[in-house]
Image (cartoon, rainbow, N blue to C red; front, side):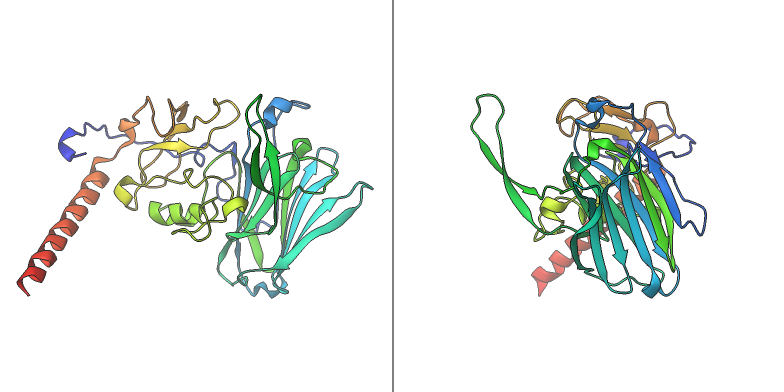
Length: 337
């Protein structure tokens, strides 16, 4: 791609939600201590839950000594029954997950140590990944809060049986398909800054000015194998590593066409969405339908060219041309030594 073949239109617009989220609060008011995110779907609509990889993302920040900070996130039925919950105790450096047992009593399920301490001034994030009715898992600051797997079998029609390594079945009385809302709450020196929901790509607003930083942040919470570079959470990740922000020529700017956005329940199986986004923020642009279903993996019928910004494209390409010239000079000098 060169500047000469780019025919671009300059446009003024306002950004809207994160990439293809069903819900995005944007930046919440200061000192927000709790927030409830409802899942707006028809009652008893099983079809709503047939597509996997729904996620809640709770973003927050420590604003003082976090030794007394406790963070909770709980997923409930419409009647207020706990499906699955998590507690982060910063002072003790511990986490614990909770379920409702068959006697309708809330009990602890898994516990563990926080991989990193809570730090004053630092941001935090909690994810609830919903895969199936009894397959759910939590992530806190890119740490998987589940640590065991199991072998399951799968067969479609007369195909051979396939053995799959999966996360544990959550021993809760209520399945995720009965979920109605997630409630997040913090005590002590912490606040909630934003909540997103859906089969979407989202990251802290503080990172949105640099696409590559945001991309690495998302991939650290993805299914990328832990030993890869960059490493992810493997089986416990939120989504496949392909569903991360795409950056223009690996620069700090976002590609105006995001061709690998997680499909939702309206999409054909295996067909990601293509979304038009702002090159600076990475958020979907202000238009009636910023996202369309792609034609196949990584390919789109739309171009989103009206949202490309010629000044940013020129900036990146000039910088990269200079870098190429520097590398060429270094190689030339090396040959002379």
